Image (cartoon, rainbow, N blue to C red; front, side, top):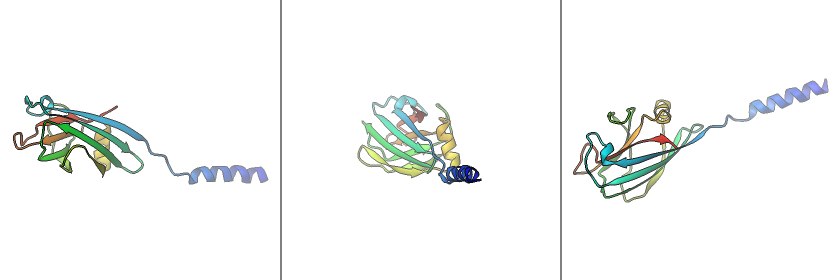
Length: 137
């Protein structure tokens, strides 16, 4: 009888452990050739991301050079060469830019499927000067 209580207690303790989320590293390389329409801008950028599925949070660290962005957006869902609406805006400022945003379940699914992209806009390229698809690393 005592053994049954021990076994039952063991399984109850396992049930009390919270589910572990997955942490996923992602990245994006931003170039004018990836913009839609493509352009010959010399600007470039990089985004490094960490997504935590337990909290739904996306940590970001964005660097760039050769551009004074007027707007930095996360767009999707869309693959390379296609466009989609902006889902959220990152703060514009001096490089590097870092922070955390919370994604919806739908946005997270699109992120992990590789169908979200970053777009940096400038006065010279209002539709986007440099762009990069966010991919798992």
